[in-house]
Length: 277
Image 1 (cartoon, rainbow, N blue to C red):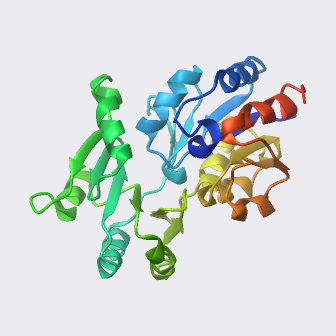
Image 2: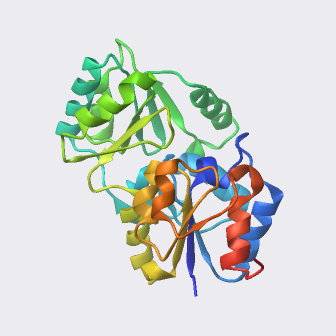
């Protein structure tokens, strides 16, 4: 019997327009009624994941920043936290300069932005509608506010970094940064590269949470669509890929559900938890 389901957000829980379908909401609600722990497990920051936790009416802990931070919704109980160390942050920064690539850093509720992307604008607009303790704070990196200033604010640690290089640079950036064994390098989409501590990934985060809740790995379902989901999919009893997943994900799963545009999360909940499939 499964006791927990870990659900990636982008490309999995939500549709391409960033919304959650009514069928998925209904399936999650029914899973909760059966006592299932529903843990959002995402590369997003904790503050960003709260938006969907609220929409689904969840009270369960969240695995965020690719497993670098696992806590309850209010961040009062931290189940797991592993940040990038100072020397590794500086190493990543120096490597990216060689590729003329700018990095955005994420740390708790603050996004330090060197390269503006559409999602940054969405967070800016969303934050204006939220109370102060729920906002995503955005700081822009420039000549007056540098990495040195960021590290002064964060105490010389950062949860995660992300870059959106030109496609021809992605493989080389991964190869170069991966030479540092203290840094974990993954992609959550075809257009990005993400960096966390070598002690941080979704698998480690999910298992840390499961231990605290007294749940065994074989009692967990996990579903995702991207490379950063692989550590999570490799440690649970029922690993599931979305129909729209990257090709590299499929060899590591026991089941493939429908795509995010066809309510794949609802389909798998109905099959494995509600026994309707």
